[in-house]
Image 1 (cartoon, rainbow, N blue to C red):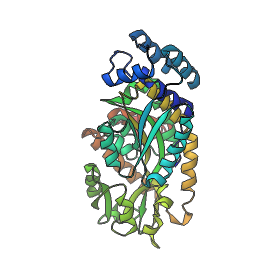
Image 2 (cartoon, rainbow, N blue to C red; image 1 turned 180 degrees about the vertical axis):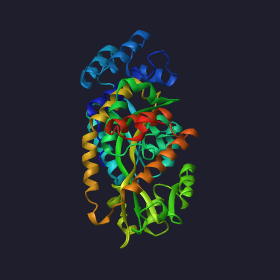
Image 3 (cartoon, rainbow, N blue to C red; image 1 turned 60 degrees about the horizontal axis):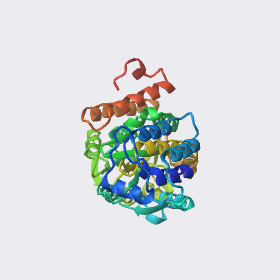
Image 4 (cartoon, one colour; image 1 turned 90 degrees about the horizontal axis):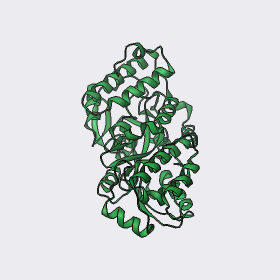
Length: 393
């Protein structure tokens, strides 16, 4: 999958962030930020008035991003030739040779033309990447939405089971989230959501076409993420057997016959050779369980929300290009693999997924505001749904 954002915006945010790396409502700079600012922009002093002005410019969507970038430069007096170093950690299951890391590397080369030094560090172990971000050894990290929930429960709920039936629903949601009106929701504790990219639908891969209903999944082995205990409970509730795994080991388990069922995005079909696990009898149930995301999480002391706002908008502007790449990968799945299920079974799936969302909301796993937003979007597409007249989310 190609990860694409507006490079001029990225270049700006990296060269300017030290001059506005503080909340606009409180002019407080850490000693490390103050030292970096003094080195890169001698004589530049951030006042409360300047911070408020920068915030107003950053959130003014009536102007094109490029104009907001130029206006913020003028307002801050930050020099054009300043060189800022930032460490961006990227999770890619294939490491340096993977599509996500390769796309990020290509972007880095373009950023260098603007005098920005971005150190890219690939990680195949997403858990290690998360700990590196928490320890401050990464200034920002690109990870799955499931992991991002650890930093921001609101955006981490985007990947909720059944929350977004199609990529059209995802497009509408990301458009809403890219608005400055949602900016405050993007900051949680010491972290900020800098961008959200679609990852496509998550489908159920099976090694036997007869596993085409919840009832027939009983007794089957399904991998669950080790760091997410709720998955194991949900699998057990349908009578299946949870098998602890991670994003790297789960596909191998499926291909080697250790598990019978594997939820995965279609982009994994060729990259992870999931056709091996399906063999001669398997297939893919033609009903997405969720729409998944990749999210860029940054440290607020390195990426203030005013700057992150510009990046979020740039991510959204790249939505079409990303979907082209996802659709190209999905097209590689031969038609023979698809397993059609009856409409009554789809209704059973939908009921089960809503029950799961409600239960996980009550347990504090899912964010209630995000679930409500997703329900409103579902009703925007189809107001005949029962939940539109009798909402429970």
